[in-house]
Image (cartoon, rainbow, N blue to C red; front, side):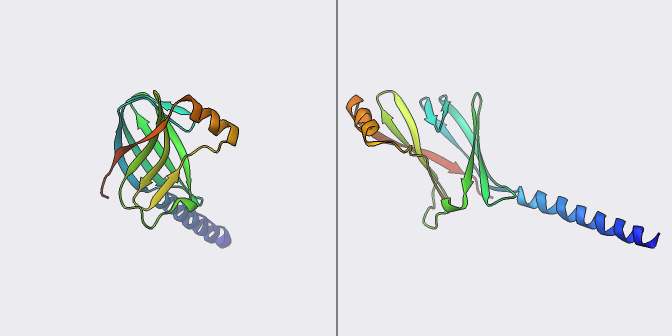
Amino acid sequence: MRYLSKLFVVAVGLLSIGILSSSVSAKDVLVGSFTLAHPTKWKNTLLSAGEYRFKLARTQTDTNLLSIHGSKDALDILVFAQSACETCRDGALKVDVQGDTRVVTSLDLPGYHLDFKARRSASESREQLAKAPVSSEQVAVHVNSN
């Protein structure tokens, strides 16, 4: 009987450690907001113009989760450890503009650089260039202080 009570105490202790460590690891790394003036494609999601909030949160693996939410649209992106950036200090969303089409190519956050440029073959790149010239825009990203 004494063995079972010790086992119960150990099990409860391990469970409480697990619960506490998961709540610590789920703590937000960065939170903030940005505004898109035009509909913009980000990865495979078309985000409508409007205000967006984001949260970069730790997960229990070596990845972080970037969650982006607007009034109509939402997007979740896994952020890998390779995205760490020692020189990234400010928030900025970089967007390629070709005609009426806008595509997010990168996001800089304090401590992170995320690159979203799609890999294209040489023939696809020539075809895109023939359509219309590509210019770039930068969208201000406001990062809240923790």
